[in-house]
Length: 138
Image (cartoon, rainbow, N blue to C red; front, top):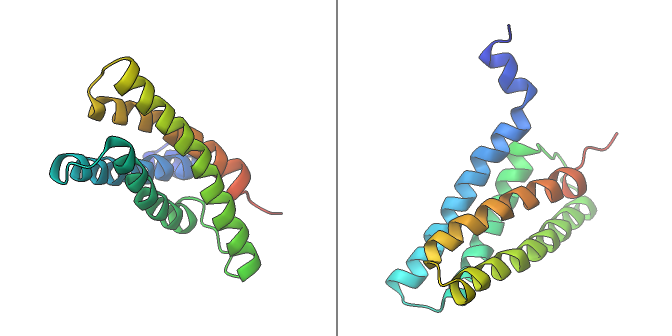
């Protein structure tokens, strides 16, 4: 029988991605909520601002703790950042599409739509990060 420690080390990357993905989601939703509820900004502007803050947070946590990328040379860092932001732009499109469909077409509460959208976005972002951005080099 596997111990909890063995299980953690076998699935360390996925567990850490879920943890930091959860934190990123909290950052995203918190920024969105503050913008829409406190400052009464437009949902789509708030969503974009929340996305930008979450992308910065996610890049740092993914690079350091999740995928443990040790690259520090300018060429590799530039490739990582460009790939990371490009992939996040793709999933921003997914996020905006879900937000539009949920709010405008289905008339669902914007925070409920935001949470559901983030589930899809976190899954898509893991695939991009794992297989394209922080892929292990041999």
